[in-house]
Length: 273
Image (cartoon, rainbow, N blue to C red; front, side, top):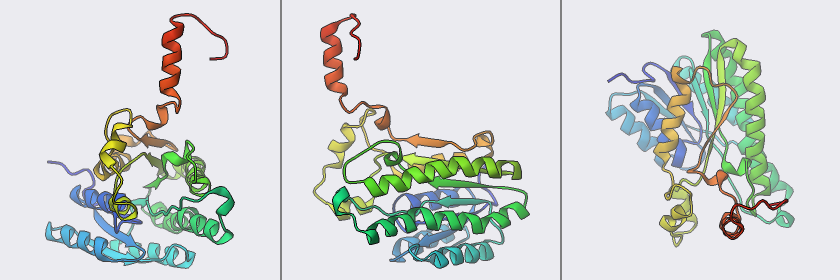
């Protein structure tokens, strides 16, 4: 069976765990050579590298602290050196903090913007010459439904994810004439190991039932969409943010009450509703 990423050279940031790890593994399954980035523990990235190598693929794990932009830039240099070029950059790395607006400190604000936006921005800038040299490439930025809708305690995180959506759209029109496609993915609720570490008592099955489709997504759902955007099947998709959320952002927060009002009113028209 034809593998869509055969021979491609790919860098996936934040791929030691969660979505990024599955994205990197799926690129390898589809025939790509992959560099996996991690920031702290090497366990997840190194185990993925072993899995890829045991299947006959080529991969390497590289550590970089994205709170230091110089390390992010060096990661890009090292990845391109190992791969011998770069076809696809997946900017997945990101962190979150759930904080009330009044409690946010300048240090926390800077940390989230440095890791989620600044590092991603300058990694992309550093990757650009390699892509231009070979005649093109693909950049996929991971945003979030938090960049499109609101939830309490995410004033800083949501701002970073909204920034990714905006700069993805702008960068796309700058780079499209040079043969580089830029798009973003905004995942909804997708349970990963860090969710369980944060609170092992959360009933994720019950949370999934609150999503319109009736279940939570999986990292593979996001990984498959990433492969699609990186492939020639998506050659005419430029500057878009693909929302993968089971219908979450299409769901009115007051939908049940709104429906009940509609049922009581029947077909009558009431201005203002």
